[in-house]
Length: 265
Length: 250
Image (tube, rainbow over all chains, first blue to last red; front, side):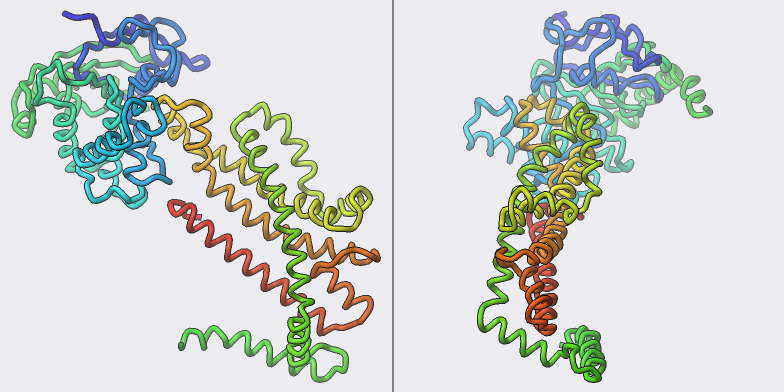
């Protein structure tokens, strides 16, 4: 097996007196889709922010391709829970943002850049809405813009923080399918990008991921890593399968007690 | 057609009431005599010249205020240390009316355009500053974080994220500031008008009508002109807001 893409070694994070993440050790493999699930308070967003370089661990080591992560970098693209779209820019303006102003588009000519932006917009199904502003779009369409903005820069690693949480059930299912398509589940594993996907929805994690890291809460610790050996490409058949239900159930059992406790408090 | 007619009801009634009330007095200005005065003042160019002088001062002072207040507001809004140091100073000066600093300004700058511009700049400065600070502070943190993760340099982040994100607030501050600036210039010119040899402006024109020619009709013409200009300035800035920040619902 090749060296891990990302390695976390005994990473802890405290805010003031409270420990949010405690001694988390985790490897993310090249080209894999890793989901992190856990009840609220397990520090999963904090883990993602640390990977993005937006927050520093209080102790422990984080490396990317063997080099320490010391801050944000364009090779790690982030999709935020609230999408973080720029309201003053159109769909096209948002999607091209990283290419125009960041290092991602430096090597591209304006024509190549425009071509990639249009292709990405088409890929997420937003053709015809290029000139609309975010406030003119539905939640599902905004989510697609955020996804397109992330994909257009072609980062090595995609960090996604509950990107589908704010959507209704039908839109969610559709976008789960599309996310897998865009990630490249039809292509050989070597051509896929590395994804770290935060979610509180167990079924979503099982459906999307190669492996699911289950965290416990207060403080956030790694409870278990579950291999999801469901065949790819996945789709509605996967959702109906017994194996899917069994895996979801086993992960639910891992966090049930804490989830109940969190709800009762 | 019908709408326009309905809108005219209140103004027409007001005008009729004014004419009726004024007809009992020999000195009170009447709508008819005000119209005559207005025609005369427009024809000989005095009114427009006065307005042009005042507007020129307002725009100059307003530009000075914006050039100082916007960068300072961005610094105060984005750097807590700067804000901690400057906020007490700002909040001490802010309640001091522009007219209250007039004596000092006249002493230092005389009674010409320099003084008028300084008064306007002072008056417009605070609303622009306060709104810029709050605009910068209210930027959605995830927008700045998104720019960070896309590898933008600090200067680029300021130019393409911070500035446009704060722009609606800055423009609101400018709209308020321009309104206050127009009020301040009239007051300043009225006050400066008392000094002989001072130079023009609609406020001074009013003072001359009041103190020398005792022409009430002329004064009323000036008042109406001031109101119309204020209205036009506000509409112009609202339009500018709607055009430059169509995404914002301010």
